[in-house]
Length: 123
Length: 108
Image 1 (cartoon, rainbow over the protein chains, first blue to last red):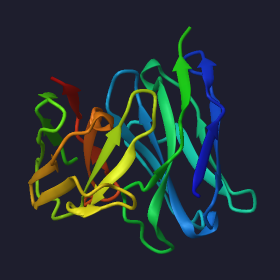
Image 2: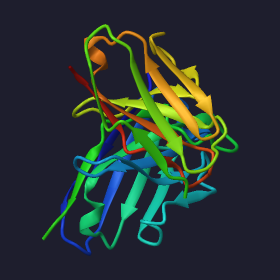
Image 3: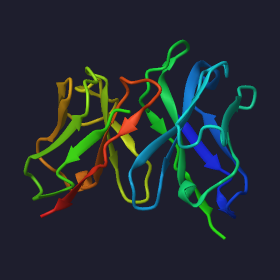
Image 4: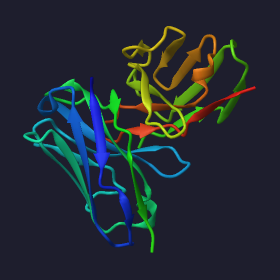
């Protein structure tokens, strides 16, 4: 069965950096685009970033563009999110999520989600 | 950016009753709409995609309808495990994917 397991969350000061990881199993990771979605405490869901199955294209929400970088290592079945210049408003649970379409153009919804990792930006 | 608006914010329903949740888009998203269920402390779970297609393993009591700007999620007979927060999400305007603010379905 599909499993997505995030790690790397924690407490970081404003302006700091953090790298999240998402270990995937149960499907052919190298065939699917992957997303990061976040949820601030007590709030709704916000899409953050997407990377194509082969890493050739990446897209970001305006709120994180220029500060966050999505990447993947298909040899390790792992997705990453490098977060720099962190702000208080980046405090959230970060989920990795799988796009349902293999290869090519992504669909843009999320058929499997990890359990999330909490990032807290505070001094 | 397409703004998704869900109503009501909270819906109080008795077990066994029908629940009807609404989602409105600020501009047409065709049928590129998904619904998710989220329970406290858990990740969201995909219920519906393509506005009306149930995801794998989703019970038939969940149904979706609508197209364009108006969408509905109906739970025909609420079970205890259905009390949760429900989110709609449009994926028509790639890559600016957006969610509604959620509807909490609580026990009446």
